[in-house]
Amino acid sequence: METRGVRMKRLHTQTGVSMIESLVAILVLAIGVMGLAGLQTRSLVETRLTNARANALLLANDLSERMRLNRAAALSSVSTDRYDLAFGSSIAGSSPDCIANTCTSNNLRTFDLNEWTRNLRQLLPGGEARIDPPSAAGQIRITFRWRNNVRGSEFGADDTTAELTAPLAIPIEGCQSPEDRRDWLCHQVVISP
Image: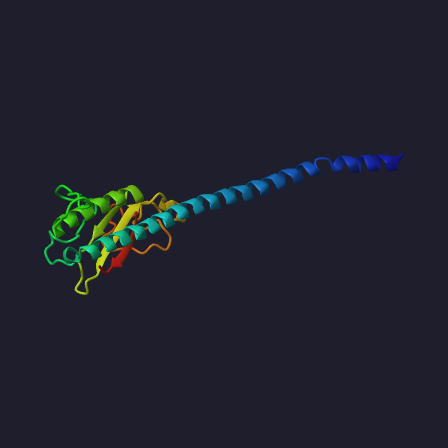
């Protein structure tokens, strides 16, 4: 009779063990799923960044081809005749229709810049570009910038500091001002028309 009581006691001491094992398994599974969701989110952010950089290269190639067709204006020493552009600026003057009509070099420059900035607004929403004057070697630097959608705290940075939010980002001179440098991502391309 004692043996049966011991057996009953052993059975009662092990009840609930499978419930605890199940809860631990569910906890481990939940942590894994949350990690996977975080990786998926990070992947989407990086895909968006890569897409924006590819669009910036596409725009740089487009402008390079436009400048090759109007090389005199692209390499002009007169600032009003060049393909100069500052961040956030718009093109002065009305845009002639150089597809249907014959245009002068200056009219073609205005037409090209208007078309190119329209494409810039479509391909890089909220994006801006700066086109620097040609260097002595005839190279023109184009700097693109667009708003970043990632906050610094995701990378362990304090949002009150002036650190860049993107990992491995290299500061580009004149792209970020000290006030808003954490909100812009920049890409720079040098072309030779």
